[in-house]
Amino acid sequence: MERVREAVAPAREFSPDAVVGIGGGSAMDVAKCVAVLVGCTGAPAEYLSEPGSIPDSRTTPLTQVPTITGSGSELTSFAAIYVGHHKHLLDHPSARADHFLIDPDLAATVPVPTAAASALDALAQAVESAWAVAVAATAESRDTAIRALETLLPPLDVATGRGDFADPGLRAELARGAALADAAINTSRTTAAHALSYALTARHGIAHSTGVPLEELIDRLLRMHGLAGYCMPRRDWQEDLACSRASNNPRLLSPDDVLTRTSRGSARAVMVGTTRS
Image (cartoon, rainbow, N blue to C red; front, side, top):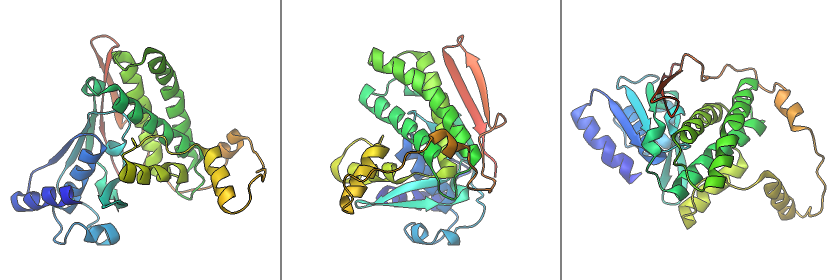
């Protein structure tokens, strides 16, 4: 929250023509807060509890440029803000960027452990969007999540065998899969398994990535309620994903939103997009 206050204050004083977020998830989340709150007068913390007081539209354009693959902030309409160990969200449609630039080469110098945690974060987002049953989840978001998994798993398998992310083609495929996962999670939002990782990161410094596997989470919850040994009925996950639990029309990632251009052969793919309401 302190970083948000430090960034919003000068922005209100100088009224920038545009805001550009460059970096990982935290940097892009701060950029969201600046773009959304620069035209507001209250303290930034006020809008965490009362997002309804934020104007429906903003006049300051926002562009996001991620330097790591997997945070998802460049495509989502919410920003994670920590007050002490407690995570809050600035959750508002205007927090979603007007434009974004995804260049896998910007992640070329990210340390391997950080790159691995970020890639696993994208994988976790895809898994959670695939199994999500909340009202926000849709057939479209689940389909996007499955496509994200199909895109992410092959390069992750290769990276596991290599022990690094040095191959430009591998980074490009991870970026594509992560963008799909980001679009899916923006609709479905996170589930309990992912939410548990926030406290682990804030309190213990554990890299934010995969949270807790679903079966382990269920087992722990059953034990907490004195139901150890209870056998939960199993269903075909494909049947779950095929159902339609919601009929709302989400904001989707379409071919018009992401334009793929290739330079230096197939080694480098740059995705440039414009998000629309």
